[in-house]
Image (cartoon, rainbow, N blue to C red; front, side, top):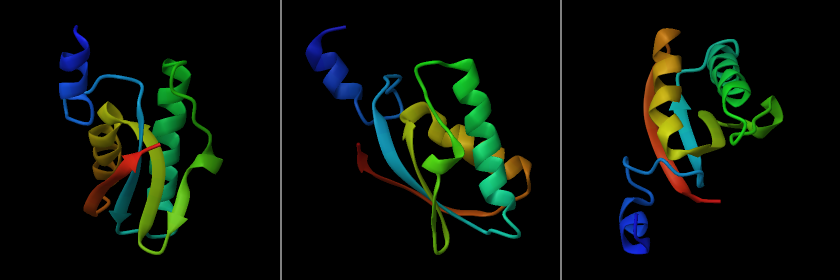
Length: 98
């Protein structure tokens, strides 16, 4: 892939690179279920993929959700993990690269 081709997919759904993005998940939290769902999913992914390192201290609580640094392709997977726990996802905001 040429440098221009890589730049054209950077930050898009076609970005399969290792670049991390700060992502905010606004969720309907109840008794830490959303926190646990996100943490469990990301710890499992980190064990399967050594290029992605995650531990629970990297998940930052916000008044209505959580922020975490993720590669682009994990964003929809986190939403899926939340949906599997029947948790409402009100918005997902990519805050920028880290």
